[in-house]
Length: 601
Image (cartoon, rainbow, N blue to C red; front, side):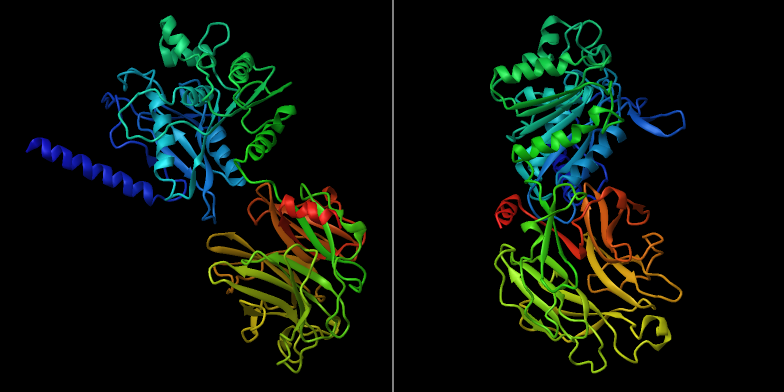
């Protein structure tokens, strides 16, 4: 009976752990084990933070309860690659911020889900065998990701590991000792599919090892057999995962030969490998301080793309008009979001055919849920509708349509700067624009605005054949135009908009927020642009930072501001370059394959 109750209690504990793993909150630490293998009970051994000179925690000591801290790719239902992150610290502490959380956020920006591993630091006080304790945790972390791949939208065949310093030793141990039977488990592979080793400890051999890591892991007097076993350059074989190594020549804590010797072993066994050795950086530089080593994240990104772990980098595209919009659609591209180059020698890709004036101003292009590109634009200064066309390749376009979105309003003076956003939840497209309706909103009517007093209106459609009745979209209490919306995360949206007020002069860009694409949106923020007139905002995230581009129309050039949090903005207009004469455009992305075809035009 006692044995039966023990089994039942064990099963209940396992079910509780599984339920926790399936329903955790983002960034909440989740337990790695229900029963930690080889654990020694010690009530006097407790986790604590190491503090820096200012009293801020910068590392964790005396870890005895291992956890995973998830950083899942947001707004994705795809099977994403995932990486277990192993912070360094000489097997004495864990540098959980610089080599943990910050690394996870960087991986997220590449479309990789990350799990920071708080692994047990080897100690006889809490382990029967301290040498295998960290490896047990690393193996179980890999298995946990594969076990819950479906729940967390992970690709079970793209589970990697990254390690820094002593965490690099653990990552290389996991990459060479994945078949070691260090605890009882079900038949799930613990082999990482790829590994990234950053200024790693690799060897336990005297003269090359980091002695602190060696003593902490193997003890003061390890046997030659133990030293050889955990000198991972000697454990590489043809099944070792593809690896990229990062090190600096002037690393005086962990000699660069650690990486060199591991690379040579990979090469000898014909394992795909790449190594970057930088002139400077010393040891423990994390994502970089200053100097050549700051390029390593980009090197890793390129390696991940080349090995098909993450998808190819998209090409940034810019749709715009020139002059008054008579000749139609122009397109430019950028690799980095800063330098923009016109395609087709800056000639038009599509000539306007609809509307009173047959113009193609303010062209907005998005890729819809059907895989086609959908474009709306301003057709005239005085029309009551907008233009629409679609394309599968941005080269061949459908017949142009005129959509009479404001025909029902007799007092409509204009229909300007339409934008389009696809609602993934409903499968609908929402089209929104600025119009002045004579007699409406008299409280903000001024002579200085020449009778214009815009508000934002919208309609919805699933097929661009039938449309919902036009409704008022956004009424901020001032003359508003040029709104564009971006999804911030699963439940939040940001609207970038122009305050068109001329008395007192605004002519600047602001932001508003909502937890629903259709609104309601918050009050407009303070201006995010400077002491100049700006219009036609368009926004996208580049390397994890929001970039908002806009037309400095009185200065006859383009500008941009940048933010990490949508609150604090920095003007980076001096860092961007656009084709001469660019007017009010929209940014979107295309694949490399699509771009190659477009370049041929």
